[in-house]
Length: 116
Image (cartoon, rainbow, N blue to C red; front, top):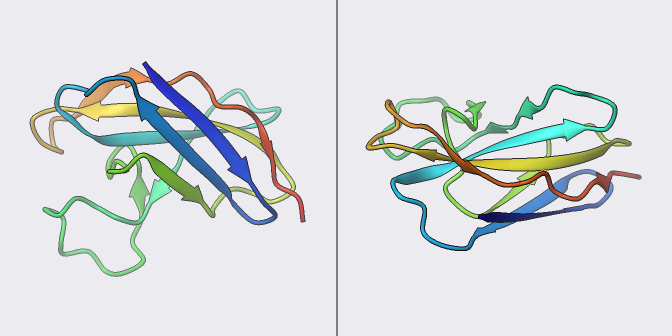
């Protein structure tokens, strides 16, 4: 089981999660954002790839399903301000980044409001 919690201020949200036990072959986490009123989750973009992906220009981003988040927290600066949003994480598991597949997922987080 993965627990998740979201926080927000005027320009970004901060998402934290924890697994109750180690996740076998977990390479990181895909993060999904669901703005209020929408039915299709958005995959959050990340700017840090695996150490094996060293030949990319600074500022390059990839979906977190490709470059999974390799920690238990994320600041989402790409979320639209003046919106209500919630999050879900999915463990990306496999022997390597080329063969990873979705694993255990969290429930959706609490809804947070970004206001200025």
